[in-house]
Length: 282
Length: 266
Image: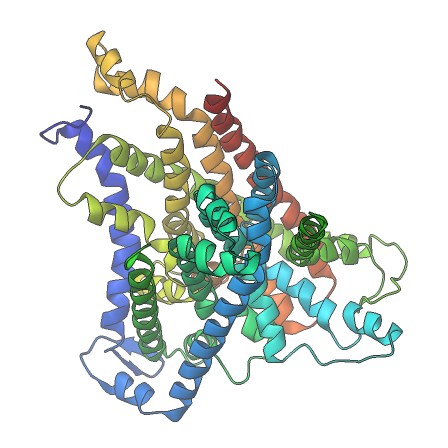
């Protein structure tokens, strides 16, 4: 009823701001980046060209593929860890508390998502340091010191800082939307508690759980701060590689190749995961 | 039954631990910012405001703070205008290519910032438009617009679809209806969107770092201090930054949630 058959001036006026701005400054840059990957760099200046040099150079290096599989591996690991760590908390918030408690919990979990990630990472740097709070605590117990900074563990702490709040929020929504009568039915039919979780609850919330996981993957796959400042930057991830090649070497075209490989990978993972999430829901 | 209570408590404890993990860095930053030790550990050193004095007597920090304020407020206004028009279009119209329109509107947050930063740097350099404060504003508007759209769209959901036609029937033109009906109705979400997008822009560092050149914003200054060494100044600056963004986010949420609850109780 509200929709009109013919677009008029008024309708077009409301459509244009988004199309123009995101076209010029979102689609434009990304399309240009694809073109840029074929450009040449001479004397630290980029020159328009259509050469496959950058592609050959990047893709023929073992160095790149090491970074590629490392990034893929730790991002997947972070996705699994974040999803698993978040799940019991989401389960609690979805099923075991009153509505207003859940609302407050989500309220608080949204806050870190919009606050400085950089400062939080710095705080972790201090907490996890060799003489930091955690190692001091451990030494009271006669343990440690443990090396936590500049390890994969440090990187993972950073990724969790980034992903966990969002994972809990999305999972909580997914679980809270389940029809509770189905869970009661499972209990009434004698299904054990843990078994109900894995055979009833998880399949019913599959779509939402997968969406949460996809967001964790996207966030950790693209993050350069956690692997750099908590993981010690060596060996580099793809995101660190982009920073290094574009910032120090002025090699924007080569960085563009790495970036395009990342986008293709993200698309492939996201599309197959979402496809899996929507496939024959039961 | 006793088993149930035990399980409930275990889950509650676990959830509390997750919250501790999420808020530990924010709390730590606050505590360390008033702590005298350069390398904080337990037991803590004595109370001091030295780091604040040091950070706030640094002209570079003030310069960056001023720039961050300008960037985030301009980007918030632009993003909210764009987000509003996209949300309204989605609310009111159905047209050929609407799916593509929505994808374009909501895609930016799914692209890793570092990639968008590189792409924007290349693109703006083509037009000699990188390395300026305006460059940061342009890029931040792109990143913020989807959040603005989501917040305002949520509010439009609660608007009776007959409200606009009613105003037209009474003789108001579409533009007048927009001004006197739609905008007043969505005003809380518009303010919420301004706060939320300002917070996003205020904390964004990757894109700002790439395109800003010498015009640093606060997060870029923090990033550069971090690259140097452990310097507790960051805690002082960080606590101030947290205060700003948490205030903005909380205002936004109160505005969004306050309006969400009303229809339920009515």
